[in-house]
Image 1 (cartoon, rainbow, N blue to C red):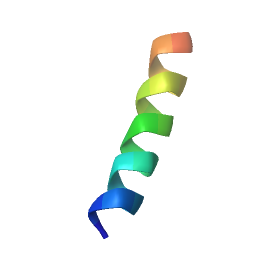
Image 2 (tube, rainbow, N blue to C red):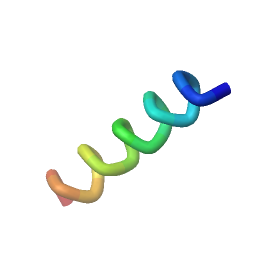
Image 3 (cartoon, one colour):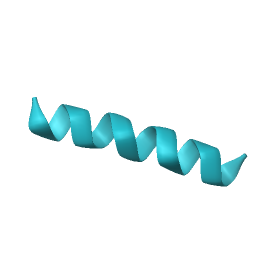
Image 4 (tube, helix red, strand yellow):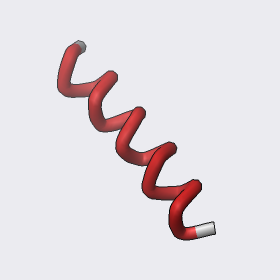
Length: 19
């Protein structure tokens, strides 16, 4: 659960950073 959350949050963070 923690790992999946980390991946999801990391992906969202990268998308937001790129945007």
